[in-house]
Amino acid sequence: MSYLSHFKLQEQPFRLTPDPEFLYWSKQHARAKAYMESTIWLADGFVVITGEIGSGKTTLLQSFLSDLEEDVVYAVVSQTQLTPTQFLQAVLTEFGFKPFNKRKVELLDMLNMFLIEQYSSGKKVVLIVDEAQNLTHKVLEEIRLISGIETHKEKVLRIILAGQPELRETLDSPGLRQLVQRVRLRFHLGPLDSREMHEYIEHRLSIAGASEKLFTEETFDTIHRYTGGVPRLINTLCDTALLCAFADEKPTVDLDEVVAAVAELDWEEHESNTGIYDKLQQIQQREANPSDVTRIEVRADGEVIEELTFPVGRVIVGRSSDNEIFIKSKFVSRHHAQIVSDDDGCVIEDLNSTNGVFLGERQIKRYRLRDGDVISLGVHELVYRDLRQQEDALEDQLEGPLEEHDESLDDEALDGADDQDSAVNEQ
Image 1 (cartoon, rainbow, N blue to C red):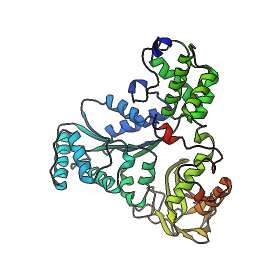
Image 2: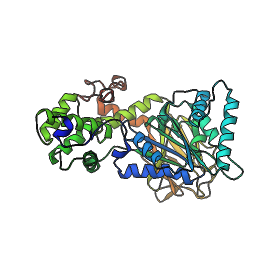
Image 3: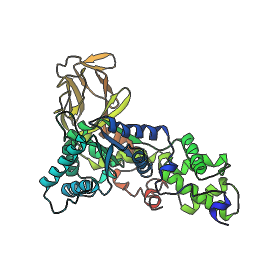
Image 4: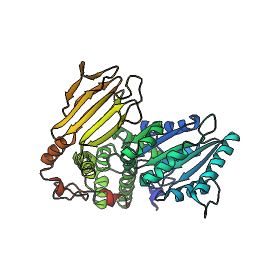
């Protein structure tokens, strides 16, 4: 008897290869797809979708592509470790050209003419770049330039960038501020919560042909503990648990099979559930930019829309695009305020703005910031974080200097917390 016939399934429910038929529409995935679809009806649509490895980005893209109308022409570039010229060649190749042995200026002319022709024919053109976290700053700058190709009425190229969380960090670097200003929407796919994970598992089993529950209720908490709600890890663990149940000739998967699967995979509890993961991310971000002492979170309607870090020195906040912190709002002056970091901390100062700078209900002209202070500028908020103070606190929590915590998250330093990613990602 085979694995599938034992559980009365028509196909494998937890394959790792992307398949739009199995896509579970969590609120996050539905919202991300809606953002991608907005590029079709927005002439200057430019969307960035990020997510952890295995969060379902590629499956989401495939679902989006399968629903496109006939008036949409698209190119998908997945090989992203390219030079600017190679990138343009890859784009044109996807559009059906043979653009090799041509200079960059010729490539740009070919692309420009193609886009104008498609627009004249009533076609909408979408460029999708998967694995965009690997793009260099030069290629991202090339993307910014081609996003500006337009007729006398409107822009003619829609763009979707999809990638791992590193893409967010890259886009937030000062050298790409002009590109970020072109981006209409940014969305990050996080892990599934416990309820969503339960629905995700049942959904995939149903699509595969299961007529009754194959996982007992007691298994779900443990599955979430060891997968952190990451779809790819859920697939790996559930598939292994089904194999364990099949080997034991059991009709369903109970807690014993999940525990056996965890042991078979040699997994520890997922790092997102230990509390160590977030602390290490903060440390690694600090180590990547050791000169940065200040982090500013820009919020609107209670949501963080941008995070920026700065070294010692002066930072200008305002509506003008030449500011280090650019806030596009009628309530913010062109040069609204300045934030000055020094060895003693950080001071914010109003630059004679029209609507003022507020700490709570109190209007301030000059104020020495404390970690966690929330400053209001019109409808936007700036949350101040002192990276030096946070670093000291993190060192105390992890009981040792930062140097002891390398990228491998060694077991001894983290009291038994393993770095599972390298092992899991090979599954």
